[in-house]
Amino acid sequence: MRFHTFLLKYGEIGIKGKNRYLFEDALVRQVGNALRNVEGSFRVYKSQARIYVDCEGGYDYDDVVEKLTRVFGLVGICPVVRMEDKGFEELKKDVVAYMDEMYPDKHLTFKVESRRARKSYPKNSMEMNCDLGEAILEAFPEIRVDVHHPDVMLHVEIRNAVYVYSQIIPGAGGMPVGTNGKAMLLLSGGIDSPAAGYMIAKRGVGLEAVYFHAPPYTSERAKQKVIDLAKIVARYSGPVKLHVVNFTDIQLYIYDQCPHDELTIIMRRYMMRIAEYFAKKDGCLGLITGESIGQVASQTMQSLAATNDVCTLPVYRPVIGFDKQDIVNIAEKIGTYETSIQPFEDCCTIFVAKHPVTKPNIEIIRRSEGRLSEKIDALVKEALDTAEVLEIR
Ligand code: ATP
Ligand code: MG
Image (cartoon, helix red, strand yellow):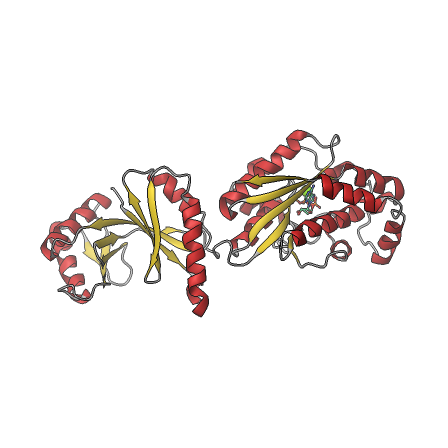
């Protein structure tokens, strides 16, 4: 079947009252971005609380559908056959031909749902439902009508042309990216943080990211893995500005000066400070991490409080109440899992103590950080100044 148009249905943005056009415009923009590198020529526009993509000439159907299913804000993607309006008798034939081609096995129930966007059309929608239904019943003896739970809901819309569709491919849901500001994702090579970034982007938030590495203790390949993860997340969120921060000297200095059981917590506090610096510089409204209560020593309630202590921006932790398996399920769904489980070292794991504190006391941690006063500011500044910025698409 050749589809000429995609009718895109959106959910939540429909309820935004006066601001609705902002959401629709963002959605039109995101759909345009999603199709930018797809072969073919597409016109994306809004009309009467719907978004349409008209496809001119040939295009790769599967590719278009795949790209559209990643656009946040869409709840349904309907491939449409556009028919020229040549009068109702012709339309009956065309609709019968559509059913024949779409559903080779006619052992099914259906219902016709007509709509006239053009009120001058000679038949009203009730008459169209009856007459088109009758034509289909006459053409295919096995087919049945079911007005309550039809297998096939055949939509026929009279606009400038006639739009016929019966398939709704589920969309990604959520809100169009860019309608809810921007946040800074702390992106490690693990399973949790890419899933966390995806979840916040799904709520309409654009992403930047920061990755801390510790060369030569962490390898180029560990960094490449994070870049690969950012690329996968960017399929959903759109372009991600990734800051790669060299954390080696800060980590070594903490290692030298502070009690080893507090290393991870103190290190994580510096990660948050640096992430927040870049976040504020670029107008991000919050930080995002993949933390989940109790998953490791640095994610007990006390440890989270100690890490949070240094932040002034809100820290969003969308997987905070998720079990590992729940997070793995998301990672598998979005396609980051296989990359995340590649076994490369993370800077966090290199200097970990055998017995890290699980109930850090914030006052004690602050006092330990006091031991860093001589050099830490210069080291942080050096890390900020030498950060590498990559535009991930
Ligand atoms: P993940 O699977 O996301 O790596 P994790 O279970 O390994 O999480 P931690 O290593 O304690 O947990 O990290 C907790 C969170 O801190 C991560 O989800 C991520 O947001 C952030 N983080 C950890 N290491 C780094 C890093 N090297 N660079 C950037 N952010 C990091
Ligand atoms: Mg990790």
